[in-house]
Length: 326
Image (cartoon, rainbow, N blue to C red; front, side, top):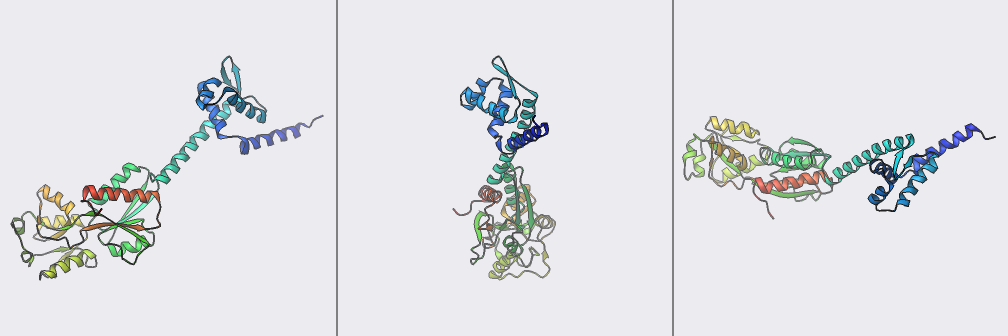
């Protein structure tokens, strides 16, 4: 006599082998197609194979499992309880595989993942928001973090991988082969005053007209301050001791609007205030004050999400802040 417990054990081993190694994704796809189309002929047509090939796949599964998965009723098929159970799980499995494919697609092509940006304050009002908005349209599931700091703090951050890329007005040091540097925009810093300031009415102001005016200046440790100081010194102008030192462009613009102070703003932002009628740009050549905007990242950073963010910055640099070099 046969041992019932031994037969049961053998049956369980067959089930385990079937689900662990024998079952193929294509067989699950066939089952799902049969549940929708109800005919072997239509499934064969959909898979571009013969009807016997579809029947063979079903028969192989039934032979290993030792149960019927379908019954033929005329030209159509009906699922047994075992067929329904396997088909229901097949739907879940293939759905999760579809999600896995989407995840890989997102990670490979940059539509998800994370990217950390560091930026100097003189690019955050216009260029940075525009680039992040463009990035979000192309990668709505990606996470973005933004840190605003001076260039001297940002370069160590990208080297230490605290941020993936930085947007600065300072180029990467020439002796930094590990950094990838690209100029993406011309956005000069311009001299801005209140629309009521006497300099707002000068048709052809000179540099000497700036002497004696109060100033709002960036942090004295920043490259922008050094460039401004050097430029003014070249015209014999000294910044007064009572300058307001601030890195907040919006606060600077608001303060300039209410006082006789001169401040520096990126031209893209200054143009907005001029259009609103609250400020005026002093038409003096300030192109020496770091007018180029750079995007800098590690050369070996091949993260597709970071690459996509770089593309968005380069695009917005051309559209919103004037083209960089070709």
